[in-house]
Image 1 (cartoon, rainbow, N blue to C red):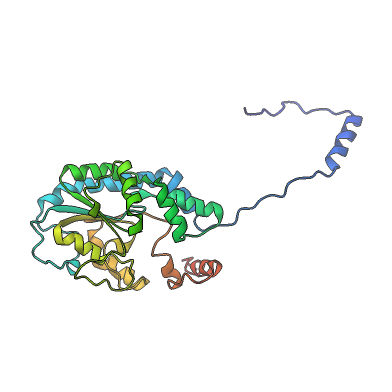
Image 2 (image 1 turned 45 degrees about the vertical axis):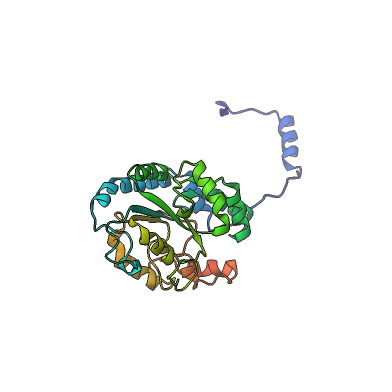
Length: 297
């Protein structure tokens, strides 16, 4: 109920005014105000959870991808793997179709986990992450179920190339199935650290080159979806130069063969701002990020 202001001024007798003045000056005990510690991720997580702009951006993206599926299927030259990542060049045109999707923030929304970190003043760690995955409470990102349905209706197999560890496979697949997302067979989950025969992963073990190659050996890859550049192509280093080169070399594929989802909460772009040195104290990392701001004059 909204209180109304009085329409006429309230007249006080001198005695009543004196009494009220005494009450106003009397000291009162109050609980100290709690001030939340500033967190770099607060607005990012709230944008993902609460903004209509985030929801409609993802729905638009996945609907745009649906509109390209028939053209991709009809064109025998259509391939979403860069030539350098194919080890069966010239032999993939007649293979059955597949789509490669990252999982986290591409298929499953983990913003509840991120919100807990903001609430508790914590940062990501493997144990709390594993606990979250075990809950199987991640929800589908907007638009992905609609896309998955359209792809499977066309006979396209979805492969989940993820940096979730293999030990999280069962909980992850159960979460996907519960949401109505297709799991054609157990091997559509290609997790972090798995060995791929006849493929050597350069650089970080979190790279996905070998796992993309594995899908490409048995399928024509029509599209790739992710929220990080490394979900689409191998980066020789997580530097601005390497990231810029990847976009410059393959930028024409985005919105056709490659579909990048927005993720403001985390990603390779962030450690690139502090030389990938997560051992630095949080405040020092924040200072280096602030120094990277483009402020003009």
